[in-house]
Structure formats: structure tokens, C-alpha cells
Image (cartoon, rainbow, N blue to C red):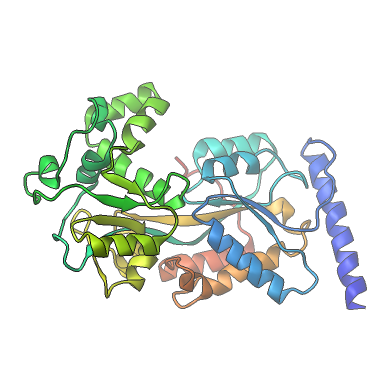
Length: 351
């Protein structure tokens, strides 16, 4: 009887979703009996972890399809319409933009549920015997940018070349590759902020978004920044072999290796669970998922999938054990209530 009930529920959901597609003015809605999420590479490992838990707790349900398209690419796919041919969820390492929200509205994606699932932290570290660097986004940018402020190739060889208050230690940074979400965090939270300290860069942004992005986020390729792949253990080994080097990786990895590494503060703020969780640390940013309310009844298991997120985003939950930083308690409570009520975003506060 349980199998018959599950089949009947799935069939009804499929018909409902087909109706959604037709109502939105899209092509034939079709049917789909598994959850589909797109978006942020940073949120991806947490979304897949929840997918595993969802399947384990819901026998007979298909595993959700989670695609790492980047936040912007995911939003574009998400906002194309309502129906089986469009994703149910957009994972995002930033809040949805006003322009994206408006695109959603134009394409019939009227009711969007916004849920903050946690916080991301980008850490800077050196070996226990390192020089004790104290950095700012401006210093990091001027040390690592390929073409600082668009004034020509980066010539800085030591940290002292960048800022007289720093030691004459050679610049040597081991960090993530361009394909990594951590590299995106480095670009967005640190390099861009440092670049924007020059008023001319703000003017450049208004003139040419592409030129601004290239100037502010492209990293030098002369050996001062070393792409160390996705293996953070390799970075730790390199820091041990070169105590004057700097490593860049997710906050959780710094926490796991505090016996070998020490934090390098940014703007005088050290990366700790509290400073990352509350957003005081410059390398912190909220992580979100966006869900189509029109798909909640149409897609089998979507409510249970959201509930699995809420059950595992606490400080001692499964997601924090996977490396995510839990959001502050008031944020978690608000997000849990949103999962229950399915309240929709009005968009008036978006930028």
C-alpha cells in the first residue's frame, strides 16, 4: 500500500508540475520525479551532502540532481521559468540581485523562497614559524594582482615592496585554482575590495564591467601565486617547507590544522568561528538557496529536502562537520521558520 501511495503522489506531482509549465507560458511542462538544483560551486558540496542524507532518509526517492554552474549561471537557469524543464533550486554564494529577481518575475517565477543555509569563510594562514603578517584587502590585492589598478604588470617582489610596515619577506602564496569556489571568494571578498580602494577603479566599473573584473580579480602568473589544486593538505605541506609562505583556503581547514598553522588577520580581524559566523571577518559571506514555491507540491520530496537542510545546519550539525560555518542563531531560526512557512521574498530590499 505504501508503494501504491508513493506512486500516486508522484503521479499527481508530475501532473501538477506539467500544469505549472503550461501556466507560466513555457513549452510543454513535461514531468520530473526528482529534485534539480543548480548554482554555486561553494554551496555544491553542502547541497550534495544534504542530497545523500535525503536519499538515506527517504527510501524509494531518487537522488536530487545537483549541478555546479556558478551562482550567476545558476540564477540565469533558475529564472528562465516554472515547470519541469527548469530547476527547482538555485544555490548561491551571495544574495540574489535585483536584476535577477526582476528577470525571474518577467519569466513567471513569481514566488521565490530565500533561505540562508550557512556562512562561508576564506582564511589566510602561515606556518607557526611564519613572519606574522597582518594584511588588508588592499595589501593582498597589490601583492597578487596581475595588473594592479591597470598600471602595468606587478613588480612587487616582497611584502615590504607593497607596504613599508611589512617584512622584506618574498611574496609566496599557495592558493586555490581558478575553478574553485574558494578562488571566487578570494576574488570577490578580498581582491575586489582592495582594488576598489582606488577611486579610478570605481569609475572603471561603471565604464566597463569586464575590464574592471579583469583588472581587479586576475592574479599574477609569475610564480608569486601558486595554484595548488584542490588538495589543501598539499598547501599545509608547502607552508611547512616554506615558513615564509602564505596559504589561502576555506576557514574549516585552518580550524582543523591549528596545531601546524596560525591565522593571518585581515583588517585586524582574525578568522574564528565567531567572527566568520557573525560576518565580522572580511572573508565571510552568507550562503543561500532559492526555491520556487510553485514547485513545492509538484516535485516529490522537495519539502523533505529543505527540512534536511534545516536539521543539519546547526553548529554541531552534519553540514558544519563538512566544513560549513553555521549562521548566527537568529538567522538559523528565521531560516527554519521559512522552511516551514514557505514565505516568499518580496524583493524590495535587493540591490
